[in-house]
Image (cartoon, rainbow over all chains, first blue to last red):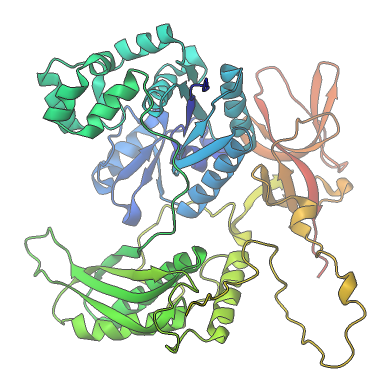
Length: 425
Length: 141
């Protein structure tokens, strides 16, 4: 029985966060952009034209002057916008290929097995996504996922020559790419591994493809052995199915400033629980336990350090934000110690189960149907009018402990009151 | 002994209406057998499609086309722009809402208000069409 050899595509958005910002700011089409991490801490994304001037991870307060000097516009990260644009990109890709594995917010693997005109499809994906969303993408096509990543990297590196689509199913093209790519650019080869490989004389991707698989396994791990095999053209990784429901749900964030009193920390924990319970209901799970923790800053030698957490068992498996919030907020009384400057809180939902699955005790209490209905209405309202429209009374609308996001763009695609405005003149 | 607990029935299907009607104990509703799917403006305007965006419009240059201050435009980016379409255009990276007019080699952005003259796209101008306005939504209250 002959089997069609697999073909993988890797579609990757170019400078995704910066590209999203530009969709609704055409005036910035030729202006370099950087995007900052939560709390406007450091640079986490750069447009292509900002790359020569700004390094990844540079702290914002240190480069303010440099940004001004080069005319680079900084943005706070706007995940409502990036998430919505990502969903649009992924939906478009899904409509064009047989199967998709969404790998991250800006990358997807596609199964392209059995397709005749691969280059044509690659170009179609690129032009469709660009036209329908304004986001430029690169497409790499190859016989394995690792090679598809490498092809995509080449498409990005040689944008002008390749038009953003590189197909290396052909052996001659594959070998050219392998010879001309540094081993550090291979998917899964970190800085540490690069040093080890360097010592063994493995400099290019081709060297790794030709390296002895058994030696690699013995010296390092089966992971790098698989990588080498994949580079040589033997598929070891398959298209992953979508994730099963998560077993834990976490919401943890830094405060916008240090908090010394209990009431604002309670507000923050209530807000994080609001978000965590939304995630819980979105995957249609219930939770039986929660863990709440708070801590001070960890790196400032001047500050007194303290961290503590507490696990709370719930009376029955639940997704009711009111019960969850009460449990979490009450638990804080037990771990809060006055006299510290707290910087972060975390809520963790544990022992998740599906409704109907928790049958260990037939007579145990279960969540009243009333509560389930209230939660459904809550999600429906927030789904329609934006997150936070309806919330527990313990969550203020504009808390002063919230993350600093002073340079944030509008939620152009997810809030009716923040749509892009075009003037008819 | 084995038993199974049935999960929720509405899972994954059409969303149930927000208001629930009380089921009468007496005479069954004669309409019960005739209830069809609900009408959805989302579907009519196609706003859930990945290539469709809502844009808020201000200004008076498109009044002749029935577009007024504060109207919502439904903008489709997948449609190939053609002569006669109302478009969101980027003229030298400046967004404008105009009617697209293609006359031979000339590309003209027309307003629908005599106070605003046509704008010919000249050599050296950079024009790209952001999307085509398929519908506009106006509130009368």
